[in-house]
Image (tube, rainbow, N blue to C red; front, side, top):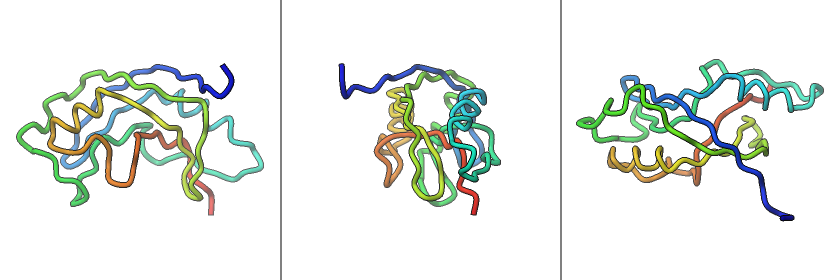
Length: 128
């Protein structure tokens, strides 16, 4: 099975705010991945609770507000791989979730946010 990446499954809980929808994830998942960043690389933890951003409002995305809050508190499954990505500002892990894609579509949005091909969990931010 050379070349195939292991994938893991977890669940999170949906939380709506006035203009954002996130899936809260287990903080231990983020702590574990942050512990894998070498100690000589300066970084800091995120200020927010560990989450996957599902909808980013604030004039960035415009979901159907009639369906806003419909899934509050529900659990949604997601899968993630073991690789940490770095984009010169954030350390993230890639996430896939049919459930989150369906919720976005139900809200009248494309499966993923503009500029993204998947979901992600931010595990740390570069220190500079």
